[in-house]
Image (cartoon, rainbow, N blue to C red; front, side, top):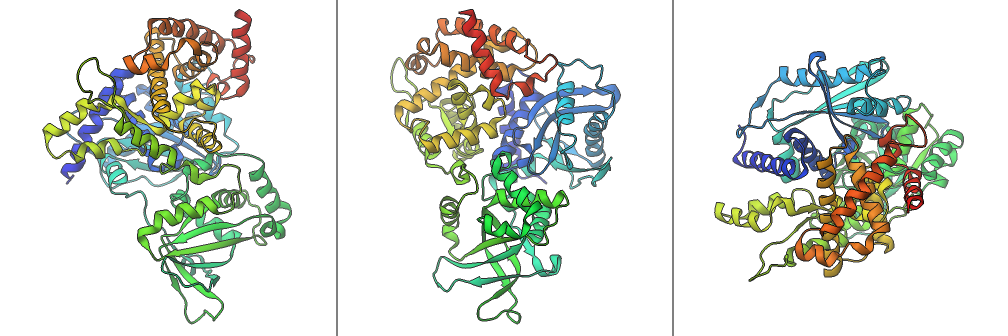
Length: 582
């Protein structure tokens, strides 16, 4: 039996989908998929990071696909399929329904391994997804098929299957699970690592002789093979306290780790900084321990807060059959005793521990000072009004779900209506969407095209370096003006019905305006009127055709436009073409 809170959340989600559909000129199903996936992304479901939402359906052939994404570290392809209920009440999704829907996505994947799409329209979403899947065929080790639904699903998930040599795993997210994830922290399940009973290998560490009320510290070595096995079993659950987006990072460091494991495994510990971990409690084998060594059999609430890249790289080597028998990893384990300071201690461990990468993952948290300050500004700055006192605001959502939490804090229906009137969902802006609008304006459409999560990582790095202006009343209003500009651009492009690649056309159009027409875009005017000027609207109409013609004439005929848009040379060529026409 669903609780009243879940039913209320269902209504809120339906209302949000309806508003999104109206404002973005999309169908209610697409709106639902976009919103549901954004919630999961913010909650840390890593295999849906940068998920591309599509609508491909062949009813007669019992085949469909609603989204896709690829995770480079897990070498996993994720396919999304959706079940949307537009009624005012929640239905039950049974075992037969789940199997039927998931089989449709499974058939799509099977079709990608045949000649089915050879004669398909290249601009179609199905073909684009096929090209994307084909691009990663040799690297893909596992396929995840995820069903999302706003109905209540029975407690059933299909068993894994094998297609060719690929393991296909399934998962189901219904309205109740999403609610629990967002409001009851159900996603952050406590990881229990039973070292002795499951892996037949205890962890022998030296306890640091420094008694304090906050934590106990242990240092030592964990075998690379044990770490890889644990990571294979637990996956993203191990890094929930870290930033999920690091899984998208690539570079020379990763290759160096892999090369060392392959050619000089005995040197791995000398070259690598190791991992920093925390646990809520541990179980020590007192009989096997000595005065100097603590033999740990069980880790409760174990999390890797620094060294996720090292762990993922070791896992990849393990999956590639590289021997880890001689590879050891330095480990620091902090067992938190003062639970009230858990988040603070973890944040500081991530902040001050040695980083394997130039990007410090702790800076990408929703608790970063930049986002806290932007949130505070959004709660105190009101939209101008011609007469009287203004009560209307934008709502900066530092963490997904904050808006709904605030709505539910209103104790009466009348107060809820009043809150929504002055803080409508249409003016709720998430940190990732704000970063998207700002990065497009600042001339990084290729980065934005890689997805909200990847873009947010780069945006956060720029914030850390001081390349993004610090939060202030002026910069907050300027950020909102760029969001309004982006939204208006999206509406104009949608009205002209170009076809595919609307998102990329938005990014590149805003980027071109930001570089060549910035003097025509008055942020103060946009903030004061909450709209763009007729002159700016005309500029958008001019520029969007230039961008579309650019997309239709790539340097390599037949190239996947969606993938080309992610490359810097696509943006550089557009600028050259534009300047040649001036």
